[in-house]
Amino acid sequence: MTSDSRGLRLSALQIALLVAALVACRIAAVPACPTYDDAFITYRYAENLAAGHGLVFNPGAPWEPVLGTTTLFYALLMAGLAALGCDLVGASLAVNVACDVATALLLVRILDRRPVAASAAVLGLAALPELARISVGGMESPLFLLAATAACAAAAARRTVLSGALCAATCLVRPEGVLLAGILVLTFARRPRELVRFVAPLALVGVVAFVALTSVYGTPIPQSVTAKSAMQGPDPAAERAARLTTILRQAFLPRTAYAVCLPFALVGLVRALRAPGAVRSLSLFALAISASYLLARPHTWGWYYYVPLAGLVLWIALGLEAAFTALARRARPSLAFAVESFAPQAASVLVAALAFVAGVRLASPIRARVYEPLWEWAARTSQAEPTARILASDIGAIGRGWRGIVLDSEGLTWPEAVRLRHPLAIIAAEAPEYLLVVAERPRLRHLAQGPEIMARYEPLARFNASGATRLDLAPEDVPLEWSQDYLVFRRRRE
Image (cartoon, rainbow, N blue to C red; front, side, top):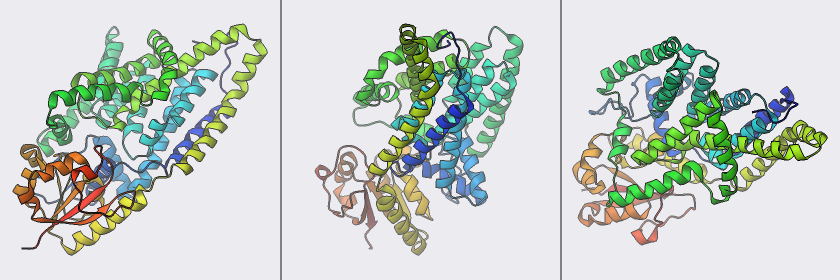
């Protein structure tokens, strides 16, 4: 799939500028994109392991150990960094940027350093707002993409043992990695010896992980997976139908403005599937993830789509290359040569500049107005009341500051919540000393259904990006959708 008969390739300087643009985009995104609440769940697991308490969320709780993080590999990596004294917010950012850089270099390699395709793929990975937001959000997604891309590249190079080991790592980063294992097994199906060499490390790591997780937690399936599969709203059928639209949009058209790129993506997808090697394997993996979500229709969040969106970027890049090739045949050879020789440099500088402008203009107040005041309150309160428990649905951010027991109303780290299901049932059964409630309409409606239960609690504080301080909120006073607007309630003294 060369772009023209001259077979021009990116120079080392051009590749360096493309990578620099990617790093610049990630740095520029930091002020605009706060760390995800869920990232702090993994951080708390990692910090507890580094402190010698085990890979648990609530050390010493009677229901522990419970594996409430779906990313075992990333949690262990963060634990190692925590043991070295690293702040995990900054450390995870550094790790994720490094993973994106390595992925970009792999994309350049598997695209044979072709100027249009490789440049568009790297700059798309750098500049797509959804990818930038996920990458700096502290989640495991960049490591997941890197491991998958490296496994596909190793398979294409017939380095089967390495490919199997990288595929095993992909499975330990996120459970969707098993889809890549299936794809690569089919790739080697007609070459039995290579298939055995690929499967051997994959099976070895799988058996070790299965035995270790079962012996410690009683099951190899993370509690977070079990809890998310049990999440249902008041109308499960309608909710699952709505998820179908959400999955399609997040995987293929996260913004309406991207519709103009869909023809290029379609052409590029066809080219990717027709080309043997890493491009096809990675494309099949991206499609398989989206297809699995469409079939199961689970609750999904933005970072689940890092690989599908990276696949979309790759297809658009291949489609742009096809369009450029068609135009180049009609243009002067010198013009096509000039574009391929100088456009990557110019585009790299332009993308980096635009990213910094956007980052400054879209700076988020979440850390300053939500996280830091919440952490300060949580540390002060839990230190003064070491036996107090707090019930929360967004357990990540509060868990970073709260030194005692955090009860998870979603059941990700506390299995009892899955059995009790309704927030009022949990509050009635446990009578926690504090509640952390997201100020969104459905949750406040749940609480309004139990006035006799909520009469035992008084609103105490509020943390949100807007600075709003009103505590006596009715469901109609707050948005329907989730936002980082937290209400704290304290159980009344009897």
